[in-house]
Length: 327
Ligand code: MTE
Image (cartoon, rainbow, N blue to C red; front, side, top):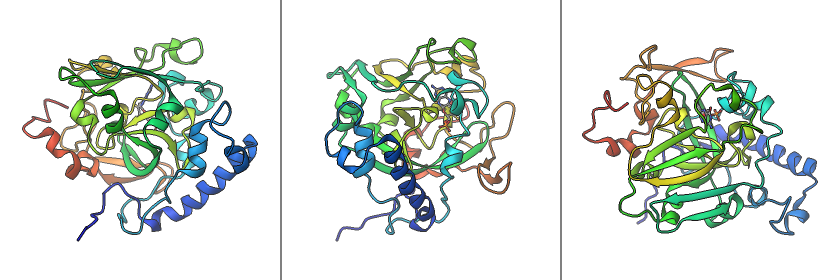
């Protein structure tokens, strides 16, 4: 007999229903404002009719699944997910990316897969999404190193599929992911808040873990610029800063890359950045977090969980490692 065991990241139907209604309404409104009804969508995926939009209208499974329940997970409202952001290329205030990234053109968008791979590629993002076999929706916890958290329904595809497409050579041990570097069009990049372009990396076994995800949508709609259009990394057991946005390059390399926040302050931000309530940031505790959107303006506090609650899926990746030293 086949027993389907619940996955921790899946959304309880009860929690999802109001937001599902919201997402459907917004998607319809989105199609209306862009002038693209279902008839237009049927015409194909050229020009204006990008395949992210096509998939948004036909490819999503229903949000939530009664077979999988985690009553503890309540998705953060869409408006908060898309207005409380860190995207320093567009300014350092939480509200700045939404304001400043609106006019940024993320279409067309070319993604490069390079380095120690058998299948190097330069591919348009919509073709890449098609090669990945469409979308699925996952509801993940997100925990920032600055001790706030959200619960986000992401649409996208497992990073493992992209790793398989790239077909790494035996010498490849890490995948380095890089954000677009176009200071002329990205308003905050000349401010030097960080070193540009923003870079992140994963060990290949981390990248191939079932949880590692490339998001191209939120709540069933194309991902907004401020959240990392057209595609960004999501690793829910790691601090939010691992989630590099607006990726232009996946490079498979032999050596551990320096990631942007580690370059900024190595003592404070490591390569692994696993959520760990037992290893404090040098300047503040990691024992608890503010839940954005819950319990008033400041957010209710809750205890932080090891690997952000995803211990079952990822603990084996770090067996034998000293997580205090490799933070
Ligand atoms: N990616 C780029 N390119 N630039 C950034 O400044 N900020 C990171 C990460 N990815 C950042 C980035 C940080 S610190 C966090 S917490 C998350 O994005 C925030 O993602 P969100 O704005 O979608 O919540």
